[in-house]
Image (cartoon, rainbow over all chains, first blue to last red; front, side, top):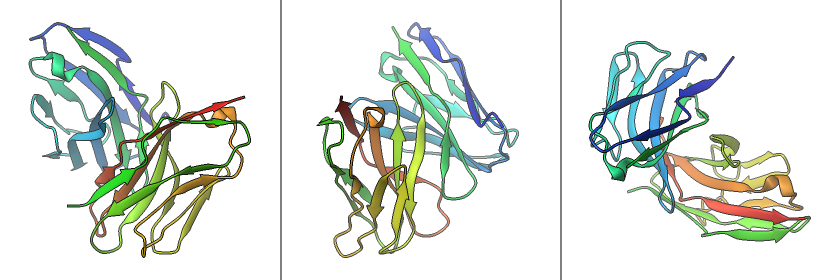
Length: 110
Length: 113
């Protein structure tokens, strides 16, 4: 099992550009989520999904879109990048009580 | 609403020192409680958990006891090692089927040789 994988590891964008952060898991987990981690603010939930075809907003969804067409994949789209979206992004999946995290994507928006 | 409060860091200790990282929570009912650890440059991983009052979670020499009367879940280790240097997050999951976690802000621990 590869667990939760995320690509890319690092990305630099210019303001206004769009991109997709990829997340995949091979554990057949129903629940997947995206967080951003910023200094002094801990982890904040962006979007989550309880299964294929179902997504919902977390606490900081603005500027981000998600889709869940398969159980395995849960991409996060930045529609028009802003400097405030500079952060480390983590994808996580869960079947029961434990959440499994990917290694993260460090995004810088200039 | 539900919340988790953990002690601010950074915490700096010498090797073999005793560690306590405080965590208190506000929640209705009986949430499940977790400690996650994030080593430098990595994602978070579950360190230990407790799902009901008076449960003690333990792993890798770390322990935490679910105290309903004080709404606390303090993390302890008797003798820390340099390899324990990381950021530690306390989290709760509300009672019921909700998979969402509510997170503390994290406490950075540095252990010096």
